[in-house]
Length: 404
Image (tube, rainbow, N blue to C red; front, side, top):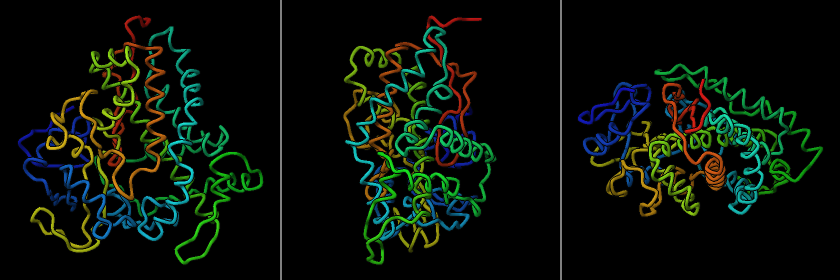
């Protein structure tokens, strides 16, 4: 858990010394190098709120089709059609419009009873012991169940898909760039299920995807191809698991660190939505988003050439004190201003409404059973990754936990 000196303006997304607490480094970047160049890995980075927002909204300069992770862009990957988060107009507009019909706030809110019931089934058996793991018992399983339910995936298929995600993550070598040239985002492992669901329609998002009609990039009215549907499934299942998993871990850690604020939430559950927003601001599950620089530009007086990689450090922008007073402090009562965790503009996270429902419901159900807890940091494990930041294990215990 080495702290990084605040006097140095340096950022290395692969250096594990930064992983536990990157915020002193982010502060140094904002103050000393708001446009930063890392010559070892050849990328630029912006760290102030307004500059991060500019990178995420200027689609003429900062393009998405080469990926949104540093390793993806450096590997010069070819993204499959349908990987809409890594597409530019007109493909992005076309594919996003199809999914936007499914991920409406109203539809996501309708999932709350099922989310609440799952949390209850998972947490109830743990109450007597008073010891539980925020990730292993809840974060690693609840988001999988929810996105699986949304897509209509049978339990066995959910488990297989989750195992593939975990195996890919565990194969990454911490501290080094990853060659993603041959990374597979095709979702081919969903092929049999897509075929089965096409013959057995149901009241789920998969059936809706298979039947959705839209006008494509050449002006033809059509339905999604099987390949596009598989890519969508792969993307939704992966994204729907990882970031919400990280959020649940941060709920455990940050509220353990701030028991007075946790106590206020226990007593007044109307504070839960604001608490979730502050958690998302304070510890963004995705610390940075990468963009390929599509043409020569200038940022804060620095020339950035076409072909460069620009990192928009969301987690730093979320603590920029010109936007958030005392930004390095956690405060569920702070003035509610828009954070950057779900992005801004046309590439904002389409699943943000679902993530918020999951976070709010999980927190409420946790507090119903565990109004107090401490975390055992000696047993905590962080998952090293350049695109997400959070725990793989976060054991916790209540004041009445059984010992021995």
